[in-house]
Length: 339
Image 1 (cartoon, rainbow, N blue to C red):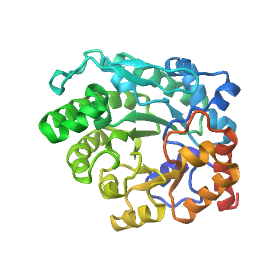
Image 2 (image 1 turned 90 degrees about the vertical axis):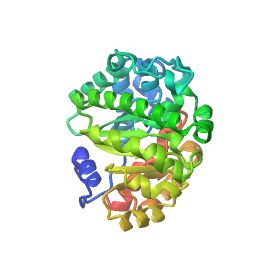
Image 3 (image 1 turned 180 degrees about the horizontal axis):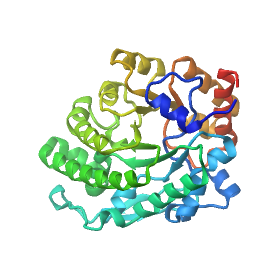
Image 4 (image 1 turned 120 degrees about the vertical axis):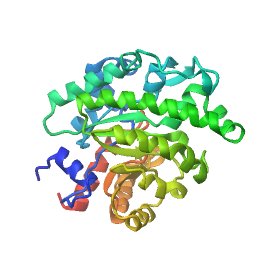
């Protein structure tokens, strides 16, 4: 069966009926097995557009996952804001180690934000992927405003400030959203098929549903309105309590972890009118990382039985995950649809 991967993913995210569910990743895609086979590595693939494009498409080339996903971390925006970022090595992803800002009122967007750090690298990698592939959607992952604000003034600090100075937190998030929007406008120029906003600090494990609705939702809605690509919102952890708000933010899709039952997610989706599709929720921390291909198969088949719209890892794929487990995701989807 010949599949137009780009059209199939686009149609599903637009709520159209398709013959099969796509199997993609909207989260971190770089694994060590793929690096070894493609001659790429971290940290080089974080800074070199050719390596980034090659590694981003590696799970398509090696496992037939149906998209190319770049970049491989959530520190891009903070870096361009002036934060010091440790790019890591081997299988360790980049992390923010130092911010130039101490308080929300200190935060300002540098004049060269869009042209500094790795934003130009990512845009060039998108163009390379479009040149290499006619039938492979490119998904660019960006960071949600609340998580960016946490990078700028410290996650623990911003969570504490919610109870001490809520207006300052709102100001920090607003500036972070302005920066993210500026980045999105750069991406609009190179036209990735999908933008995935990952906002892990908005997780139900960290924020109450009320705080999520008051602090995260307005910024997530604002940046969604800037996007010209199809878009997916990914939030980690236990998100059942914020599921209605996630589904109502205006995104084409949401991405959830295994902590949320797929049948429940579909129930809420249907109650809200089926406008937003649900991606997920194949466990990255257990099944894809430490499980067997047969366990991956079982989890994929279960997710499909429960109505998942797009089969995908539940969060960023651990770098040490075996390639055969990624292949098992695709094989199980094929089995379910009789391909």
